[in-house]
Every structure is written in structure tokens, then in C-alpha cells.
Amino acid sequence: MIWAVVKKTDKRALELADRHYTRQKPGTPQFTRPGRNLVLLSMDGRAVWTTWMPARGERMDGLNVWECTMFRNEGIFLSSHLIVLALAVTRMEWGEPPVDGMITYIGKHLHGGCFHAAGFRNDGYSKSRKLQRLRLSGDRFPPAMAAAVKTEADVIAL
Image (cartoon, rainbow, N blue to C red; front, side):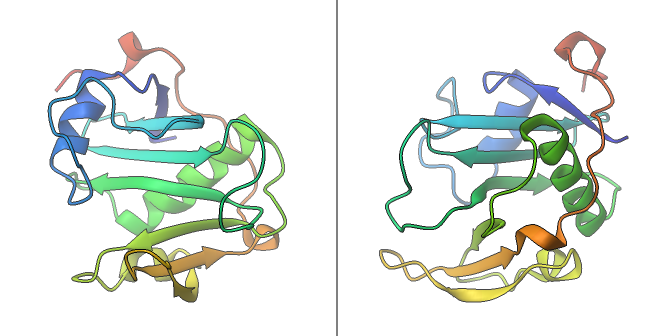
């Protein structure tokens, strides 16, 4: 397994997040949204993934989904492979995926090729910023897989 579960304040994850195009306030001590977050850091410290869902209640868009709010890969691993493994770890950590599955939004300058290769499909646009939404239905998730480690100290330092 390539992914390790880390805290949302992990400095290596923060450094990667600061270089992501969606980062609104680089340098702040957290990069995740309020709610429930699962932050994964690759064992080489060169990729980060965050799965998010509201802490309670429904999403504002009414979807019953988990959302990938951050994915950045600066390492040697194939991005689509990292995505599939992140989905498997999310399933292991959080249980069966919601009926509507997982979504992510991609910037206007991107095409989402790595997400398409991992099984995501076009699913409309966000209402506010008109970003392309991609979705993987809940029945298309990979089987659950445990993360490599669960402590930050076990992840190789950059």
C-alpha cells in the first residue's frame, strides 16, 4: 500500500496542498474544510489526497456522496493508480460508500484524465464556480484496503 493516514495538520501534506491550484490561503496550518476529513499522504511524501463529507446533516447540493477535495501528485506513482488506492483506503476507513459515490471538481484548465482513468465520469458542473464535476458511483468503488501505516512518524520524511 502506498498511502498512509495522517492528520490534517501534517506538515508534509500542507506543503503539497500549498502548491495545489485550489489552495486559498497557503501557509495556514490546515488545508481541509470543516467536517469529516480523511487525509492520505503517500509513503514517499510526494502525493496527498483528502476525502471530505459534512460533519452532520446534508450537503448543500443534496447529494449523498463523499468528496475528494484535494489530490496532488508530485511523485513517480501513476495518478490514476493513487486515486484507486485512495478510494480503497477511504472505504476501509469509512465503510461502504454512499449511494451516490464520490465526486470531485476539476479546474477549468484541467480535463481530469487521471480521474477518468480511475473510473470517474462527467457529472455536470458546480453551480457557483462552474467547475466540471466528476463522479464515481458507489457500486464502482474498489474493495476496501488498509493504509500502509497510521502514524505520521512511520511515513518517510521528505
